[in-house]
Image 1 (cartoon, helix red, strand yellow):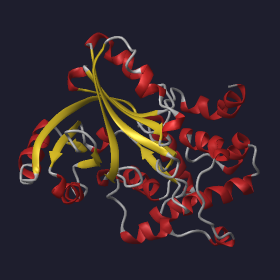
Image 2: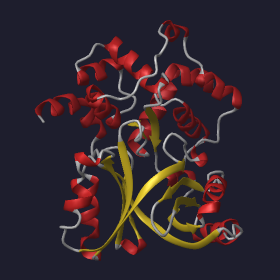
Image 3: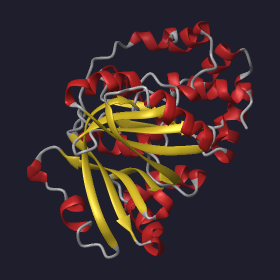
Amino acid sequence: MLDTLDRALIHALHIDGRAPFSQIAAALDVSPQTIARRYRRLRDEASLRVVGLADPHRAGQTQWLVRLTAAASSAQDLAHALARRPDTSWVKLTSGGTEIVAVIHTPTDAAKGNSLLLRDIPRTNNITAVSAHCLLHIYLGGPTNWRGSADTLTEEQQRLLRSHDAADTAYVPVPRQLSDSDADLLIALQKDGRASHAELAEATGWSPVTVARRLADLQAGRAIFFDVEVDTGLFGANTRALLWMSVSPAHLENVAETLANHDELAFVAATTGPTNLVAQALCKDPADLHHYLARRLGSLAAIHTLEASPVLQNVKAASPMITDLARSRRTAPTARARS
């Protein structure tokens, strides 16, 4: 389990994923060396990753939440095959290991096509059922983190982390949108959101100053954000479930905003389909999940139907699958040049 300093460091990274260790150390009143050691240990032992992600709408992307039913003997292989693709995220095995749930990123421009949804999945053997739900609006998730992993720092500590060093104020960011020229920058940030300006310069062919200014501009325009990936079991959330709900359209907004304030939930989104609201619950154990479903969700009369699908395994989170983080950091620019 995590101690108080571990949790404080993770909370700090939620506030600013690229904050220098010196700034985090000052806010937490410890040495930069201590923060650096803790970060390395969490990265190696708790799968902690800071990743830079593009806002889907500003990147011209539409997200689809896809449910695939497959034979138990092939579900794991299919899930890992989906996880290896660059156009997928949040790949999970649910419902006893016979269902795969994944987010698929497609171009909003229909003319650019979508091979995975229209061609690859329908032609895949051993898939017995498919349903696709377009994510219309995300109420919780993305730039908004799960409160269970960001509940340690005081208001003053958070203020210190949101402040910028005087040296950074010489350049005033100009809000920008993503362009095709940002592709290499995004690939590098997806692998390591804390990569240095020098490392990002090597990946993009830009100068470190250009990298720093482009990052500042994209963040100012909310075209990119930084997420923190960590095993939620370390926070005591050992029972995870996807909740598929049907809510009358007149009450959808109100119910979704109510759910977005529930500490038990890490994700809430409106979707297309007969279940027009989906959420992910993170609970201590099955009894805790039952308590949440029966008492908190049960009190919302506007929820007409509810299906809970236990999550057995998170195969992939938001970022690309990397089996050896240290090796990938050293070889990412070279490997990309060869591809």
